[in-house]
Image (cartoon, rainbow, N blue to C red; front, side, top):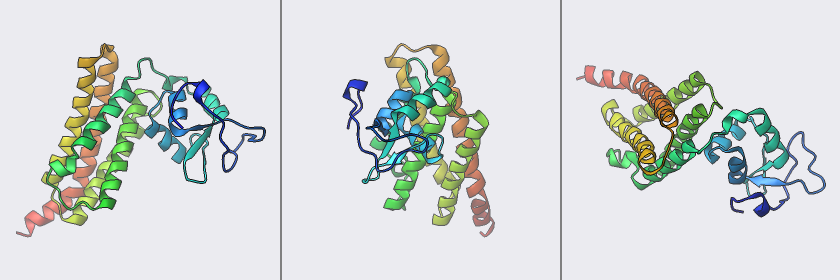
Length: 233
């Protein structure tokens, strides 16, 4: 099923009714992308909200999320602030993801000890970071809450590095590639589209705050290892 207008959305049979919704009589269900489009948010943001049970979701037999149209409409009425004209945050997140896939930062940073599980974990962490930045810009997440979660992401990077024996300078080089990629993606929007300066400024400010928090968490997790290594010589 692909994203489109309401005329293109077809009813599907959900494996179980969403809590609080009567699924009898052919209730209409939306895919992750369709529901995210209806809410005006990035699919990664909606995936995270569903995981946190901020919005009800069901799953098909194949494991794909489905959202009741009624739940989506009810959620939207109670969270009007997530709607923003222009959708700059979503365009930025999509461009940043495209750039990171094209040149994986940890490969460019010469960190070669990544196995498939590590790559998947970092991919998910990157998605969470993009979603957090988008949510804060849209008023759907408090700044302090986002900062704390971004710091936890940084700690997870640092903890992984300590377990692999990778020092903090090498991890920082890889992280700075991620940071630069995300900022470059934001500036790309200002050059190719007619955007309100205030919207661009807010995105950059929130992005810098998230990146600062990640870097602080990374350093807190890797610095003890780096200090012990230096002292043992």
